[in-house]
Length: 71
Length: 355
Image (tube, rainbow over all chains, first blue to last red):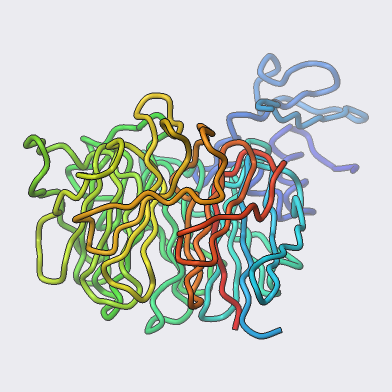
């Protein structure tokens, strides 16, 4: 989906605003991003871009990637 | 169709539903229902026909789902959540217990990390029981091999304010005021040795559904009985082939009858001569081996939510196994037939008796 956001945090807020059922899938009850999720801006892991404060520019692509485990 | 039984079967790869015919001989299998995520427990609420399933996926975190149409469609609950400032975070749900008939709309959830949540709107939202959470003894709770969860919620047959909860590994807590206050309840009598910490790792604690004050408890080591008015747990392990197991069930009408499936204490599998359900009809004073129809020599395993009874007469007893089978007895546990096989690892079996 296309969102207007200047930071990764704003993008996630926009995503939840459009799809409220994702709120508990993305964050725990204390507002922390769920431990098994990684956020990517274009092809870079957001942890190297300032986390949720990472700046977004026009055309950036954000991926929310869950860690896969189990059988 | 008149009275019949629907089995909710939780597995490591989703929820399966087995719809029995009137004779409980043929089972129509559906599933996995929805995405094939791990199901720790699924249950049926006879008060309103709701079904609940704990979906413990790491994808997006665990959640609880409920169905108001006997499993055809499912909705997602608002997650149990610790309040702001809590040192804990909801991880997954271990057990859903419909409330007492006198408390309509109340449903209870036991979660990991071990805590009790109450819903007053048929499982749509949940609120932490803070009195249990504030127990100073919570600092002594430790995770067992399967994690640290509250998995048993035993509600008294007559008085919904009288409850016990079982925690792995934190022991038994009792309330007589509906959860406003709790007291540790771990005194035992009998057995081969005095172990004050014997109840740290509860495996399954049950309240008799018809007789106030009757309890049956499967602990990591040994099984215990409690009669009305007693304040200690009576050791009733003598006569069982091992002192270990997970699954336990009570006869819903006969107040002296219960069922267990003993396992090897480290292998978590049935011991020679193979899987069997042991029953007592004298409050655990003696135990009988029941294996007619079960595969001779099969060293199967079953887990804490793996066995339950229906509400028909003669009684139906059901259990699931680690190799993906569900076994059914229509004669009070004496003989057994396969209700389903080739399922994923079975984590829970709940028998819904549909009127």
